[in-house]
Length: 256
Image (tube, one colour):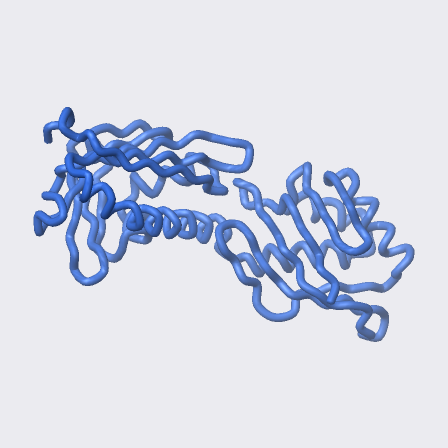
């Protein structure tokens, strides 16, 4: 591949709410690579290793690994077995990962020899990187309902000796909580806030109602609060955001 002729560049940037080590596994493990690109796709994580992408409809693409530096950077050639819009291996893809507070900043640099071919890949990468972010997030939060249930269970526990360790296990230290009656900043503020609920609303139990819906590190779940005897005290929807380690970092509770 003559890299000096690749003058037309497509660039994209996005934040993935996972650590670089977690994200990079999708460039070193063929099963994860295929979970992103499609069944039958594979990658050999070494210089000169084969890159194979099987798109829906039987479209075959790929190239070879040019450079790999886990968990920071991978470079590979890319093209299509049919030769259209570019031959196999006729362009160069560089993906760089940088750790940030909320996860990993992914930067894509796709260099091609033809302007029209470059433009044809813009929507493709927009779509594929959104799929990638979801695949990573789905692995990190493999059971979002269980994580939501752990939050409601901790809130429902009247014994601080059990409740506080449960909250620490599932939340980040700087967790934020907002609802009609709350503006909590940090776990040190959250723990006494939950304790106050058990003083002023003794016997309250909170539980999820229905499914938990997850997309890219944000989970939506309905809830119901019940008092002694199962009497409903309120219900609504909670929006959870998780950090790069899968811990709850932000919750907004909406009363309905």
